[in-house]
Amino acid sequence: MSKDMRTFGYLCPKCGKMVMGTRSVFALAAADAEIACECGESVLHTRYDGQHYIVTVPCGICGETHTATCPPERVLEGATALGCADTKQFCCYIGDEGVVEKNLRELSILVQKEQQQKDSEEQEAFLDNVIMYEVLSELKDIAARPDGISCACGCKDYGMTIRRSAVDLECKGCGAKLRINAATDRDLDDLCCHMKLVIPGT
Ligand SMILES: [Zn+2]
Ligand SMILES: [Zn+2]
Ligand SMILES: [Zn+2]
Image (cartoon, rainbow, N blue to C red):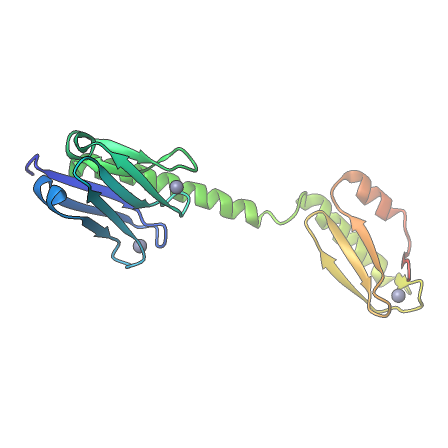
């Protein structure tokens, strides 16, 4: 490939794909350039104002759009990267096709890993899975006893909401609530010393 050709690469914030496009130095000086993702949801834009290149790049890291003003030599020679204003990571590469592709591939793997980590943290529904499991099974035992769970208002119908570190029992008659913490060993001990639970009625 001629050294008069420049490749731009970024990660599409919408679909996550690597987007690359190559333009000649001549074309970049003559007119605005646009390099769009095939999903049609994001586009990198360059404009030459006679002194600087203004590069607008959709950021695959933070999802925003960043604008960088670069002197011509930065865009037209060697290899460079534009940073994400939010995360300070590079989100756009400019240079030879091979260099851009290599860097973009690494960025893509990084972003995917971070996404996976985020997803798995969100799936970690409980503060302590073991304690929550024990609390729920203890609650089941209590509920199985005659009048095991009731409300001070006299109602015996209740709902149960499981939260990250607690279980809420709510009386269906009066709406009163009893929170059972489910975060520590102590919470479990507290619960185990109850034969019955009474929701304090309103
Ligand atoms: Zn896309
Ligand atoms: Zn960003
Ligand atoms: Zn009640």
